[in-house]
Length: 359
Image 1: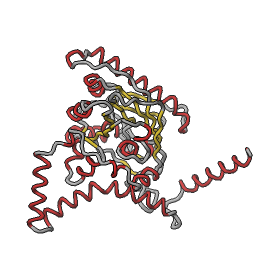
Image 2 (image 1 turned 90 degrees about the horizontal axis):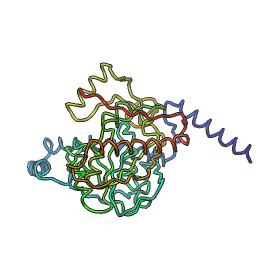
Image 3 (image 1 turned 45 degrees about the vertical axis):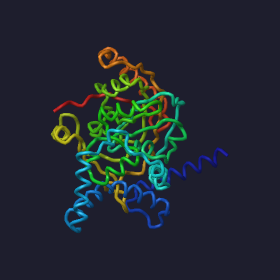
Image 4 (image 1 turned 60 degrees about the vertical axis):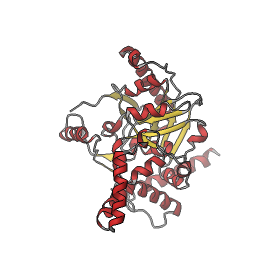
């Protein structure tokens, strides 16, 4: 029996090795894998397709369609409030089988390490940010990995940069997926809606994406980021660390060490635009050598134990209290990482907490 298992493992390893050396996708690729690739491709193209629709409605259609579109834009930029008021989450959209193909591409898996009571709110912290937090989207903006069954009663909103809501039509898709703006106002609004209402923040933000590359050393932009802790204290929401093994392995990134000209330029652009521009590459649609699609690599997300936080008025939150719960959070995240890292290929992997310099 042991010899048979050894032969199976050896055969699987051989197949993986030969696959890693391929340049072009084989013609006999199973249909389900083609569907998985298609789902990820459409997800990546959606904001660009929405930008195309915007230009098309301005230039290539009749005046009354353009007029209707201008009314939509006026409402969107002057009166729309849902990105900061909990959005319009549609569970039927989050439950579509389409998202099973999406998570199956990597695959993305969600692991529960303990129960979370629905009689309180939570501030979840997602780590690492990666290039574009694909594990965060698959696990917490869809129901494909079963969040609603694993954590019943937790009404979660995945939060992203406000710039994502500046693209016409794309912002409608985001709000229907239960995605909201990551501003302080948005966080407080959601957490104040009552028990169970919770938020998920990729705390490292776009600055952390500049360190997202395959490595046994995970650089997390967390050392001096304490705003999420203050939001938790103001609302009495428990802090929950989440770590995703594999998030940084989806793309390769051009070397940009701290102090390099490229890194300095990226930091300047990040300050001007509000988001970073990592120079990354993955695979193509029909070949594995180069492209903007992510590589197929498992993403395993572990939801850690909650850290109970008292509810305090803003004027009562001292720097010492902030530091105390920030340290508790970093320690809990480190324990979560150390507990499961050996199961994902590197028992010697480590976390390094950094703070990206301001430019």
